[in-house]
Image 1 (cartoon, rainbow, N blue to C red):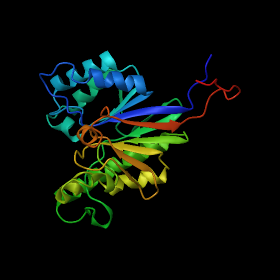
Image 2: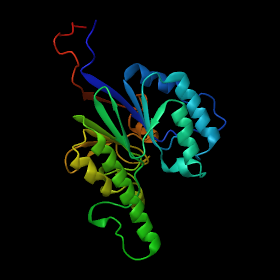
Image 3: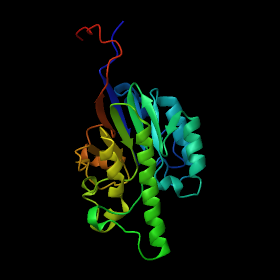
Image 4: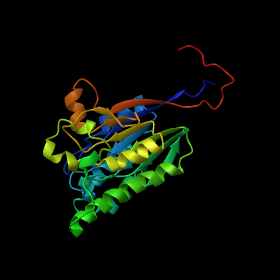
Length: 258
């Protein structure tokens, strides 16, 4: 019997924006993810308008074509119709583990997820001062950061992966119009990532950003918005493949050469 692989292969994509009146839009993509990876991440904006019809179309493709564990978070588009709970329920019924301040372990690798929110970066991030509406925005950003922190705190694994929709750093947003960068993420999300020594972060949302950056603590951050991946890597399937080392359960034997 062959040894389990020494790596966990992650296939990550976000911003697939499932639209109504489409037929099997992602089955080919999901089949390739199944062939090349051990776990799939869906990093928000699973639907275009957050409708039940869109979610059901996506659920059908997931059930038909993804044969590996699937982990997801919601994005802002999934809230558009006020049916985010229904979208999440449909995804869960299709076999997706939806994270919202929760954590899950796959083959010894921990995954913690939350949607995240806006607010800006560094010394220019929005402060909780002035109008009640401004304070409410900051409060929601802090709440999302706390969700991520609480999820990471549950993990006892050496390797930890953060799954977000909004970005925790500005670097993966470079390329977006400067005016909208504060609306694409918040450095408040970066703090728990570095505190818990996260191995990698995957997010979406920024269609015109940059593919990769690093936190202050050197954790790699990947923008896996599908439009961005298609533009930067036109000759590849639009998902990010990333390998995380895992400890073999049976280190007594050495696997044979392939």
